[in-house]
Image (tube, rainbow, N blue to C red; front, side):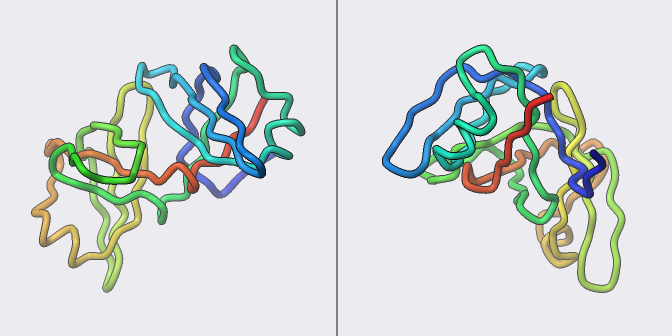
Length: 139
């Protein structure tokens, strides 16, 4: 299956915390970072997820925010440190490529945000992703 989602990070499920309708799934990415996905219990069952299951975390570029340093006191669980490797800007939006341990992420942010943050290749950044914006797939 081909997907338009460019951000695809492989990993292994390390924990599942079920709730009434949703579950949080902890994934240890192959690059060494930990990621949390909030998905439905039906999805956990349909995918046959359990500790040790190999998965790929999928995140749309429009669901990644960037910061110039780690942020505390924030509800966003997923903060992946990386380095800007490239920026393509248009009239209103920009596509920012970020090298993270084990892969590359693309963030679609406003052109104004790239200017306000003074983003440039080689600059360290932190990719921020809400757990509800992480989808999981199995092989």
